[in-house]
Length: 339
Image (tube, rainbow, N blue to C red; front, side, top):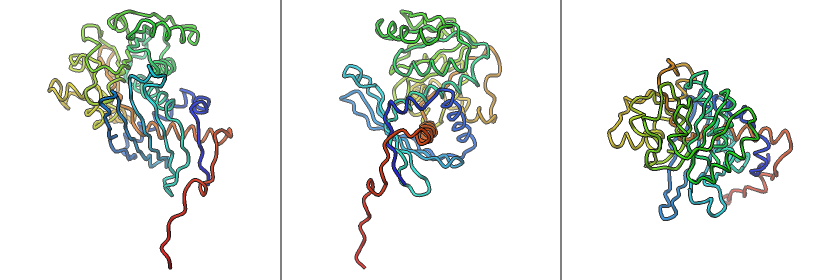
């Protein structure tokens, strides 16, 4: 047996958004059927550096896929030339517990997060949705757009972010990739949200950015940025009007978009409709009318990382990518007591 080491650029060459959406949907389905092990991710908070670290283990029993991800979130990192989110994933052989691969998980994290929104949009957005609003124009916005373009027939995308240059750079980057889409760089969150069919929020905000008066009936929102306690991007009044679907009950209530309104008593657990896995399996209906507002609360699940890492691993083996080490070289021999 050997251990495969995969670099970030190799990962990028291996994954397509269509494939990742498919495996993430299957992961949600497995969770909906109760066939996964995934303890809630613990956090280390580096308050003096405005950052945190999370550890995310999981096991999908049907697919016999297991992985552990270590991931950070440091919003100040771009000032130093590093991504806000960086990750390392270890893919594990469930039969023996030995590592199969160690890979950069930064692109996997971005792709599987975009894919999760793609799955949620498939089940919760209106089928004729054409207009997308992006609140935030960082690395995550890019893969969110990738996923939305696979699920929706986009005609118009409005983009807002802190810093006019960030928005201009994002629009300049993507407009050549989506020739049939009209991209608009806007100066306010209100402009980005109003008259949109689908809205994606992907900022590290700790106060509401999207107000209830800007969200029309029938809108679907993928709330991505609130992934730790204290973070929020939406006016809680939106949640009071919406069908709320979480990726995971415990993680969502602890650190997702609903965490602050729940803690403050603005909403209760009874206001939350359910998990996306329940919708994907058909246990609960998705969108039931063109008028309802739907919100997908995405915190990022370890099972999403595991299936995406497994996809990359299998494709890398077929293409001969990565560096392989003998496990005998990598793992030291056990110390044995004398006979």
